Image 1 (cartoon, rainbow, N blue to C red):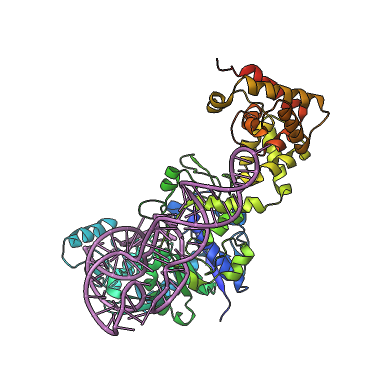
Image 2 (image 1 turned 90 degrees about the horizontal axis):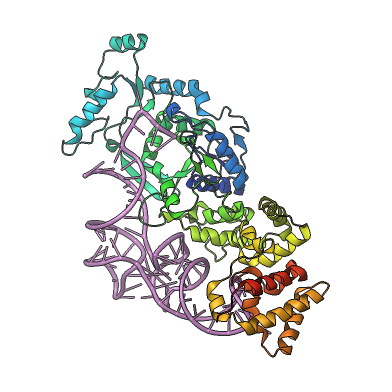
Amino acid sequence: MRDVRVRFAPSPTGALHIGGVRTALYNYLLARQHRGTMILRIEDTDQGRYVPGAEQYIIDALTWAGITIDEGVSKGGPHAPYRQSERKPIYKQYAQQLIDHGRAYYAFDSAEELEAMRERLKDVAGANPQYGSQTRLQMVNSLTLSADEVGKRLNAGAPYVIRLLVPGNEEIHLTDLIRGEVTVHSSTIDDKVLMKSDGMPTYHLANVVDDYLMKISHVIRGEEWLPSAPLHVLLYRYLGWEQDMPQFAHLPLLLKPDGNGKLSKRDADKMGFPIFPLNWTDPASGELAQGFRERGYLPDALINFLAFLGWNPGTEQELFSMDQLIQAFSIERIGKAGARFDIQKAQWFNQQYLKIKPDSDLTTGFMDSVVAGGHSCTPDKAAKIIHALKERVTFPQDFWEQGKIFFVAPTTYDNQLVAKKWNADVAKVLGAYADELEGATAITAESAKALLESVAMKLNIKPGQILQVLRMTITGGSSGPDLMATLEILGNAESARRIRNAIQNIPLAS
RNA sequence: GGUCCGUUCGUCUAGGGGUUAGGACACCAGAUUUUCAUUCUGGUAACACGGGUUCGAUUCCCGUACGGACUACCA
């Protein structure tokens, strides 16, 4: 097997879509598994759609996701430049070669003429409104014009494009690593534009030329490219590179969580989840789209989740580190059908990864949010809070959401619980407990519990009966981390103060 | 419309001519936790349809339906 060289080749037209991250991931996995090379190439041949900042965003997003690039933009390499806009002369040369070999031709048709042709053919039964073997001889191009006339137009600087001369009656076969043999009839392919009138190549030419020159071994890309893959095969053939043609693998698409169709930003917005890896501010509208990173998704968790959307190892193991993915990955086990994007599953992965993360990795972030919330916190206290909350969180920011109670005393109390359980007897027991807490010099979860038990015994009440209410006086709510641990973290004085507050402020039912 | 691709629980999927069609997420119930969450146990739930081939098809073949992608001087 030849050296594995794969590329991720996005277009810098905006933020990197999550589906693009998965495509990059599969490329990366194959490269690493075979000790090959991962290349990042920027396909910026459409000047009109260029978005400033998009290229850097793509690099940042891949870096965050843990997908490292060996060769490419901002990295360099033996096949530089890796930005297609900087490779213009190269494409021109190959387009010329195609013309010289009679495989491509100049076309001078205006946009209006093309439109007119499509209109004319729209209603003709059995005809496709395409620029191809059926129609090319009725158009303005170097096949219908005399050599003289063509030369005159070229010299005069008339705008032109270069089109591929696609044969009218030929079967084109290609082998897709995921889908097997795919056969397409050449008559269904139109004479695709190879060079645009602005001198830039189209995707089709640029991608084939670059993949060949960069010695790409596998083209792993989205399924939306499958229909044009036969065209690319033709290009390899006419350029004389068929022996070196990369292997193709067309990935199933990521679908909307509900309904039908390709996952889009609109769907993500509607369902309230991100679709971009990192925050992205659209330069045109100024609109901010929140990223997975900012939402609290861990890169490892997102990668694991993404890897399983369309691929699985065939075992029952679900949690895979990047290294394990590299080990286990294989193109053969990629599915054929599109995969719905299920954000709940992503959350589950995140929870799993957060749980196995060492507490010490979480303290700094937590302490920052405490400070941002206008409070202060010792590392020791932070560690205790994280320990208490660890089993209950899905995202890092949940530590602050759920840990606020350690810094802010409640001012309101769970209505239902008040109505059901709050009475003079309970208040009396809690008052006695507050006395005990104030009498103590310090408390631990154990001593707080022992104290509660002794108070309860003295007043002839079961501890279980007041635990819920005690929690409410401390946190205001009916759920939260282990109550005794909560008391320990709060300390005896603050705990007692909160209990007294509650006794004073919650009216007794008459 | 045309071309191509696809179709196993609600979702991600395993499997593959004879299986109680397996797992995970989600959901529901029970257990444990004298509090909440965790955890554990259990449960509901799927081979799109119709023809073949075959002793036997969810699995192979052909249709149909449904879905998707593509059909630009966008990638």
